[in-house]
Image (cartoon, rainbow, N blue to C red; front, side, top):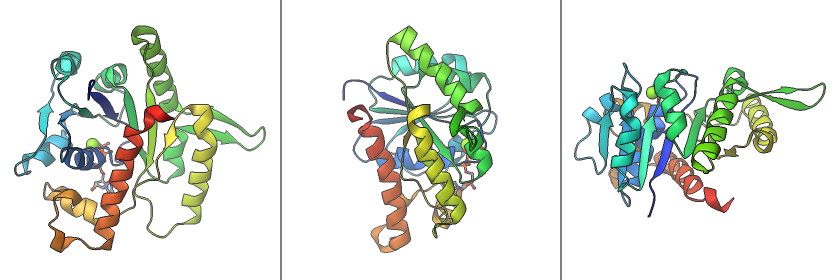
Length: 240
Ligand SMILES: Nc1ncnc2c1ncn2[C@@H]1O[C@H](COP(=O)(O)OP(=O)(O)OP(=O)(O)O)[C@@H](O)[C@H]1O
Ligand SMILES: [Mg+2]
C-alpha cells in the first residue's frame, strides 16, 4: 500500500464504542497489514490501558499526551498501512487535531435518538434534514481537507450495540440514517450487535480475533464478521 489510511474513530458522544472498535480493528487488520494505533483520549486513555494487558500484539501503539505532536507522528509513520486514532468523546483540542489530519472518520453510534441527533435531525413537516453538531464538525473538517490538502474526507457511520433482536426503535433509526446519508455525506455500515463478548474480552485485553478456534461459537463468529464488514467498508470507500 502506498499511503497510510488515517482513520479517526470519533464521535462527540461518549461511550458509543470508539475504543472497542479501535481495538477490534487493530487486531483484525494486523493479521495482514501494518497497523499503528494512537490513543489521544487523555486523561482516560482507555485504548492504551486495554493494550497494556495485550500479549504479543502484532501492531504498534502510541499513547499520545500532547496532541500537537500528532501531525509529526503521522508524518514519521507513513510505513503503516493503517493508522487508527482513538479520539475523545467531546470536542476538545485533541479531537480537533484528529479532524484536521484524518482521511476517514469512523463514527460508532448507538441506536438512541440522542446519538442520532448529533448526526442530524429530521423535520417531518418539510421532510428535510438539519445537520447535527457532529455533522457540522465533519463538514468543517471536510472543507479544511479539501482546501488545504485537495483531498476528500470520507465519513462512515457504524451503528453499534444494536440489539440482537431487531427492535422497532432500531428499525426507525436505520431508516432515518439511510435517508440522511446522501445529504450529510456519510456511508452507512451494516453495524455491530450488542454482544457480551465485546465487553468481557475488552476487560481482559482481548478481542474476538484473539479467541482460539475451540472458543468460537456462532455469536463470536458473527461478531468477527461484523468487524470484518467495517474493514470491507473502509477498503472499498474509493470505489463509491
Ligand atoms: N458492540 C458492543 N457490544 C457490547 N458492549 C459494547 C459494544 N461496544 C462497546 N461496548 C461496551 O460499551 C462500553 C463503552 O465502550 P467504549 O469504551 O469502547 O466506548 P467509547 O466511545 O470509547 O467511550 P468514551 O467516549 O468514554 O471514550 C464498554 O463497556 C464496552 O465494553
Ligand atoms: Mg474511548
